[in-house]
Amino acid sequence: MVYVLSIHNKPLMPCSNAIARLLLKSGKAKVKRREPFTIKLTYETTEYTQPLALGVDTGSGTFATAVADENDNILYTSEVKVRNDITDKMTQRAKYRRNRRNRKTRYRKPRWLNRHNSIKSNRFSPTMKSKFDSHIREIEFIKSILPISTIVLETGTFDIHLLKNPTMNRHWGYQKGMNYGFENTKAMVLNRDSYTCQCCKGKHKDSKLEVHHIIFRSNGGSDEQENLITLCHSCHKALHDGKINVKLQGKTKGNLKYATQMNSIRCQLLKYYPDAVETFGYVTKANRLMNNYPKEHFIDSCVIATQGRKFKLKTDVIYIKKCVPEGDYQKTKGICSEQMLNTRKIAGFKKFDKVKYKGNMYFIKGRMTKGTYAILMNIEGEKQIFTNPKTVKLSTCKRVSARKSVLTTSIHLTTYRSGSLLDVA
Image (spheres, rainbow, N blue to C red):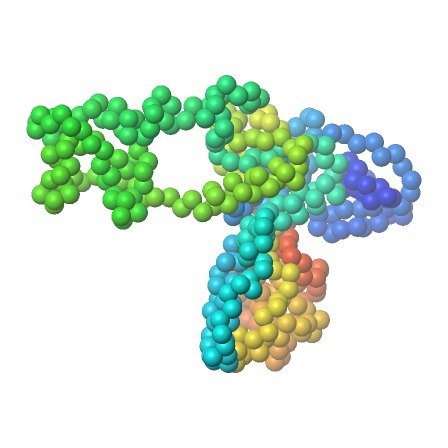
């Protein structure tokens, strides 16, 4: 699968490898990008295209995209890992800055009203801005190589508005939440336990029933039904007094940080793409299970793009991407800045450059000035260890692409986790 641009840089329908080879050989096209492989025509031609749908499985850690045509053929798919290290980096930077101020400006009067970025209106935190920009960057990149006509965004697990107002007109149908038919979780737990104390089974003849947290809320217990049990007042008091012990397995409170982030990203994406179609995770899951597809991020995006219909993979690769900082801005390392860091090129290479070594593609993880050696890694950041030689000389590496804010590599679908379970055309 080769992506094609017109002479005016407008995206056209992709072509096969054989046609692209003939166009390049005859001089009617030139290479525009290596990964994904894209060519640009050098002559005037019609710009007729077919409608394509872009499905985006949004996420706070990893999100996936897929492009489908009218015949439910998948023409492009990718998985992008966004950054989650910004908060830690800013916290460490603040620690160094506070330490330095204490050493050098110990008697300076504190100034707390000069945080202009923190107090400005409509502020988006650095972590949220990075994740939102990662979604926009990938969507705009796909639109630059394929003629996208429709964007479908999966923005959450459940449709909260539909739960509150079942009469809403949604094209994907009605959903019933876990508390459907009850005014709150307490009523549901009492009904589940048949209004009977689960400890004494009604032997105390105590008519006052209470809902007890198996894992106490003070210990991080959840308010969900899996962590609640019905007890009478006598058993409930005896349990808290330590006179009886109920051996049950509860549930701790989940981390809602990523759910909160996705709620904000959802609003921003729908504002940025007002014509996009919104869908939800429960719809994607039902369609995926109906077609017996394995659980993978890129498969969910394919299901979103085809709106639940069976799809056919016309591309044999999936593009794995990882967001990294645009550059190295830290000049020194250590609490007292005792170690200088070289952020410039060493022997023509920078950190995160994509290189070719012994026929395989790697990324530069670190460099050593003395001897011009390098440490190589894969897209996941795992250090690559070689037996002969153990250290990699930069002179033996060939740079494929310079450092970018997104590391990109392609993996054949037959070698990608669940990819062997799918048919590749």
